Amino acid sequence: MKYLSWRLLLFVVIAMGIMVFSSLPVDAQCSMCRAALTGSNNGKFLRNFNIGVLVLLVPPVSIFCSIFIVLRRHRGDGTENAE
Image (cartoon, rainbow, N blue to C red; front, side, top):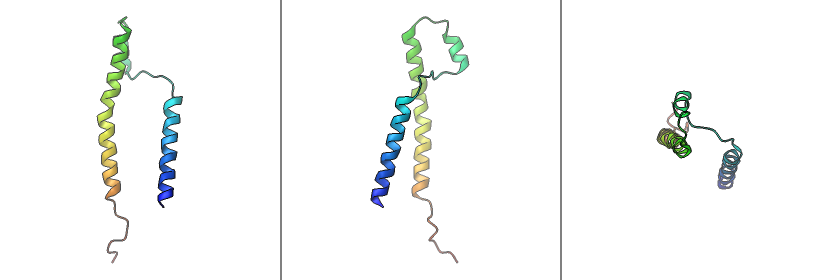
């Protein structure tokens, strides 16, 4: 059983690594933000804005993942009193 969990973890890590390194570069902007920022010629500002948008994505994703982990750990396995 322990071997299977390590194997699954290794598979997930490898799959995520492949996805991260093979992804195409994308801009983390909505179309309205992109339209407002296209007039700016400051490339460093645009890059930092994209990074800021990605940073703002971290808290909702971490909250969702932590709720999912808590629910997964405390789920019933069906062996309760089944009368």
